[in-house]
Length: 116
Length: 111
Image (cartoon, rainbow over all chains, first blue to last red; front, side, top):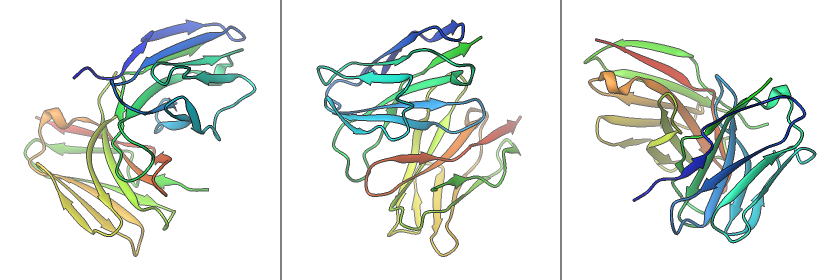
């Protein structure tokens, strides 16, 4: 079974530029998550989708971050404009079922973003 | 707000010894706890989980203990191997959805 795919794996941009990350979840997984992981910290949930609807985006900085999952499969996360403090690894995860119970999340390898 | 934290940022053990990684959590309403392993350049990988109505759960070489009285979670790894070297995160979930991760403990296994 293929895992969660993310691209690009690395990205270096200057502050105030825009950047987009792409995620392809495991086939059939209804729930998709985007996390931000700053160096030395645990992942922090940015947004959670159930199919193509947003379940939780309470920690997404909506003035600069946006995410979509138009057809309930792939997702993109965009930052516009980027700030220095956005330097982090952006992790995508997916899980098979809904929001109940021990719904194991499968993580992709992440995109490492460096903002100069 | 909710937090999940770890007592020690790094742990160094000899190959073959047992490892114990500890975690404290603040939200007593959490009903589900998970341990993840993260190797360099990879995303977190599920190791073992436990529901709040249990106090112990065993897997292959790993055991998770939950003490709800003091809001403490631990991960025990038996006969630690070099491949166990990684950062370990505890995480909690309340109400079936948002997963909150702790800061992580880096485990070094000395050959």
